[in-house]
Length: 482
Image (cartoon, rainbow, N blue to C red; front, top):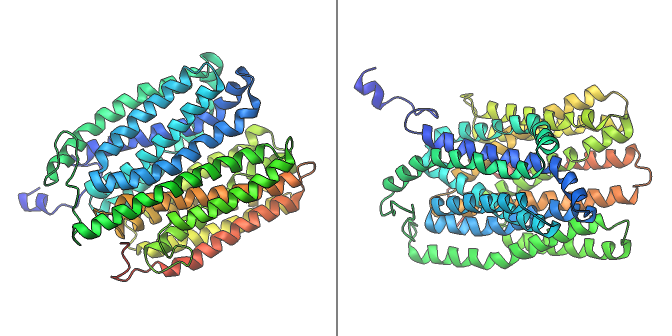
């Protein structure tokens, strides 16, 4: 290759320039995915060992609650100081969380570790997104996000089995302590890329990666106002996390303390709704053109897919007499089809990003609608094939939303925009889980097809609303988030 050809060669994700960054980021994403899948397998054994079955719901809800607060902090931190410090803190917090759970002597220690785990995940998620935005050219971002999704396939398929074997042969503690062994090489791979990124940034500290406090082309006054507004959102993020925690607790108490639970559920939903209005970008709930519409689509798509997917294993078990292992096939379908959709969106297909997003939302709507057949007929194959189509659509949708989030951001707000999109997904999923869980709890004695049909049909409706809302995403030059 001539020197001129080398200069003009298109950038490659696995080229020498980006290889260290890609390996390090992929390692952290894979580690997070394994931890996410492992907990579901190990937690039942943990609560039985500590004789704390009643704490199962709290242990599950703890990371989601702390995740919301962490997202708000991480967005502000990454925009003000750059992604390196937030990424380092997230990795350290993750290590402490795994150590705390792995050495726990009581259920409160487990719950504390789970809270730290959720906090770490928020820091890592936002920091990695900002790192991708600043270290990779725009043309490589779709491929990077498809790689993110691909890294969930192995944990989704192998993770539960591997965790079960470790739990049975060595004990559940090694599920968490073993994660520390994987964290070290992932971080070592990432360090050269972080040092390179720090050196490339004018005025950045080469040891910490911290950037100048004001890089806003609109001036320091605008930047200061945006940061002040972001700080004001932190109490509302905390309120949302408490409401999310309370919703989960109330769902667990519907049988044992129904009166209290029925009081807590509507109050928590109200607090969550008010907090969502406060922490989301202005115009999100009216799908204002530009980035607010992106956030709205993120929330609608996430709620639609998670709302249907969470109840499919139970549907197959109750209505079709599937064994737990057979019912769990939906998790494998979800992981593989999602990754396939994400891989497809990262190819050189020549389609506009907004077109890819709409195709994904269309496939989600059609696929989830077809999945409702599982609630009304005995033909499970058509329903499961429909769910795989929905998974491909979700892969196209979720990765495209991530790309659009960065495209509609700049160096001063990519962290806050990323955290807003992540919070929209988390809070919308929490809301549909509360509503669907309540519907199921009311019919817990004998859940029939109409209950599951109503859940999946509502999810298809949310996907359709997301598809219609996507028409508002087409950005105008004045629509970039302030």
